Length: 122
Image (cartoon, rainbow, N blue to C red; front, side, top):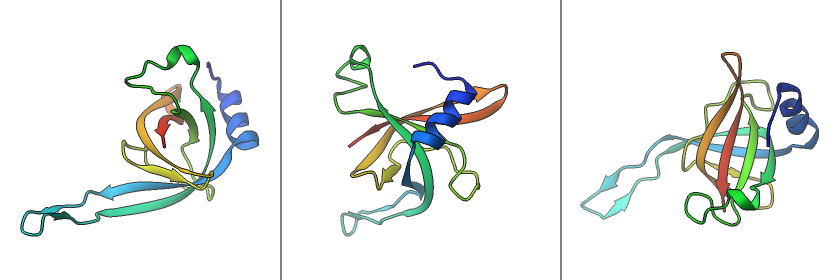
């Protein structure tokens, strides 16, 4: 699917869903004495994003599997503050399920990031 700046803003603002973006800000650590991991830290953001499905010809069974979706995400949260770029392992909740980010790319307008496109998986 091709996007221009107007289409991006329209899809997100008129057809997007509010979700909670949970960004891992620090990894947990492994304690060899106990054999367990500490939880690490996260930061949550309320964001609006537009979910859509991959085309059948994009599903290769390896990198993109059946059930994966794309998430078109604004670079700002619902309060207007900038959000960090979603990373592999970050999650989105509140749209009937929790999905995890597998990969993120960016769409630019000139040298400004217009939005993030995340491959997400349940």
